[in-house]
Amino acid sequence: MGYLILSKADSESLLVKRLEVADSFFKRFLGLMFKKSLAEDEGMLLTKTRQIHTFWMRFPIDVLYLRKIAKNKYEIVGLEENLSPWRISMLNFHSTDVLELKTGSIAKKHIEIGEEIKYCSEKKY
Image 1: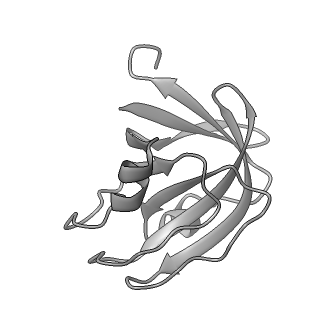
Image 2: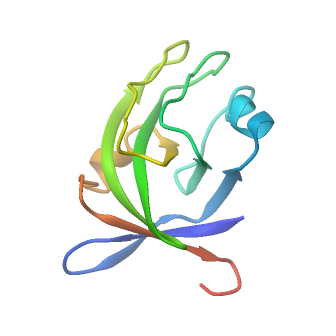
């Protein structure tokens, strides 16, 4: 578990308070498949992937395509809002990782391509 901080040009804000990292093939495959919902402050970071599916999911999600630029730092290189269950996302060749958020998060938090995200462990934040 950890935190994700969204860095805008003039400020920083908490993007995800409870982050689950899917860093193996099996974890990435399962993703949010059998979860009932996703809270406002929850997210899942899928490492080493450029595309996701929402098969067997029960709810839509917002998707951020990320490019790793430093050890714990990412640039947002693509956005996909309200991806419905039983779909395959777009393929983003510029991304290295994908972040799944509660649907509506992109609009509510005014997330834009080019902004940066920092990962912090619970102990550091």
